[in-house]
Length: 405
Ligand code: KG4
Ligand code: ZN
Image 1 (tube, rainbow, N blue to C red):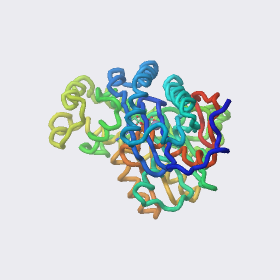
Image 2 (image 1 turned 90 degrees about the vertical axis):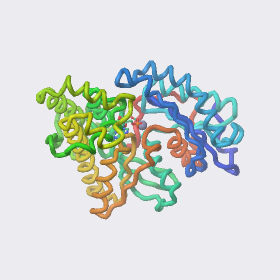
Image 3 (image 1 turned 180 degrees about the horizontal axis):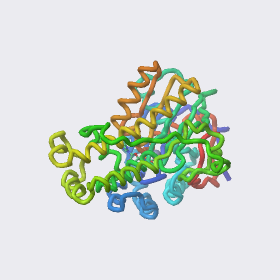
Image 4 (image 1 turned 135 degrees about the horizontal axis):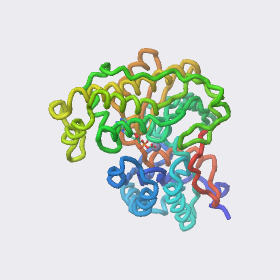
């Protein structure tokens, strides 16, 4: 037996979709109207659970999702002032992500669907991130007609470039580029861990980088060459089920594992390590980034701020170089940048300035919609709901689910 199909459903109601997201370390639920208006967006973060390990521990993530999912859904409904009976569908992230974590959201969504006679829509987490930008544009009423866009999804688990094409009310995606190893957010998290900063590292580095000299350390990214040995091989990343790398233009491939080693080498060569950790720990006492320039400058050595600024400058520069090269090659006049790293201040400023210089349009989600949330999942589900693309009861987690072709 399948969930109710759209054959006997008409959208005469409000078009309310409950989104559920549990692919990594946030348990999120949201209610979104017609893919364009967020009535509520609740995110229960597990940061405190994983922080002391400096990264996400899968078993702990599943346990925390189990604890948080029901309160998150209840809070999302209460905040939206709607009940289960007002919902038209349930959208849930089916991949990519941690298998056990995904399963909590999927199992809950399926049970609720049975109980309330609602259809389930399976959403790819990466498509969700792309729709976070579109949702924000709808809400800000600065939405241009849906147009071909180049989307950079840059987060803790992903660094992907897609060409997104709208057609007949749906979106189609083509993979243009991706990382061969670590995601950009992973590099932020690893460098932060190395320096004894908090987890996740992105917001800490973002806050401290603005006080350093970005030109102090010449961290560099080499151009990735098409290598024969890569042919036919899947990349060594969490979301590996994609087209072979050999099919992608090497100009649009990323690699972020080397910069972490370069930072480590710089730290060791400059004898920064022990003393720095202790002084930075003081800055970060209370697990918050320095509030003022004075505080940061007083407590963190300039050498470290310079290195942090140089690291960020190099990462943002590499993301820009490849994204704008792809937009030029593909004639894309609109760029969407999304995912946790899209919350970064320097990234937003430099992408905006470069887009302006080239006469392109660049859009980001709000800061809250940049990192994982369920509103983006409910928004991405709307075109599927209209097309009647509902999941079968056999729906299960797909940890390496690919997006597009
Ligand atoms: O999208 P997200 O919440 O989860 C994934 O799908 O991975 O992204 C989390 C990642 C983490 O690596 C975090 O360090 C990074 O996004 N991040 C940032 C910033 N805020 C979060 N990176 C740079 N600057 C930020 N302001
Ligand atoms: Zn994400």
